Length: 295
Image (cartoon, rainbow, N blue to C red; front, top):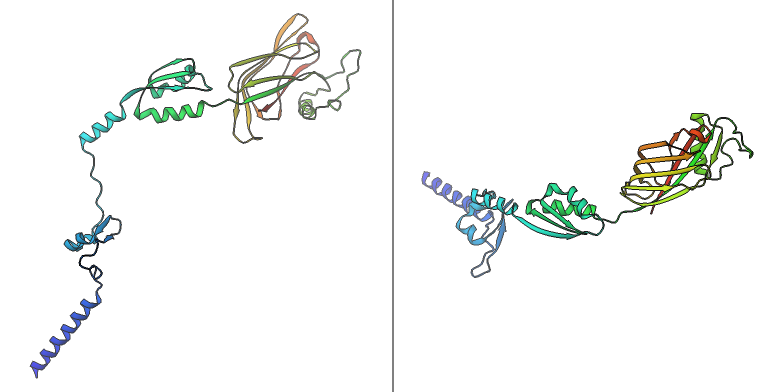
């Protein structure tokens, strides 16, 4: 009786083992003799061919090994390569070669210029930054068209033959009239003697530009320094000028009623640059209004 039970248990164990073996999917079940080598990807690792898997099935569960660190000799060689010096020349289209050398000297060892040609002694480590800066600066500068309006303002009616209307209603330029209305509120001016507009066209970044204004009021000389454009979207850009200076000569006397620094205003907008004294010209103040259009 006990012998029969042993035989039954042995048969049952054999059946369970056989069933377990048959139910486990084999990674070699699809590999046929003479078939081309197949490859299997392990998670996070490289492709493995079936031959490697046969030799070591556990390789499927191994994680990808990290790349070995560079040896000191390899690191030294890389440093030498990055700091290798060589001479390279560039032909500039818009920016002055001598000016660009001054701006980019942190990237070069030596720089020389001849006309619009630039030659530099540079390293591989800094050449990409150098050329990126050159790409940004060597571009055609935009044209700025300035319009200037000199105005003589009075608090009381001036003693003159022709009648000067009170307020700004008689001024035909709507934008000019708007900014003078703002000045009128602050300074209590009641009469404005406007002059002809004067135009000055300059290229962005120009160092200094001068103009004698068209005027029946006095001899006005105007200077603007380093005009720049800030912003990229048309209609929303600002015009920045480092300095706007107005000199005035009247009755053999010359003075500077307006000398404004860091002037900024929206393109196509109007701005009161300054309000200054008139000296012997008469009136209570000289007002300078500016507008600019970007071409």
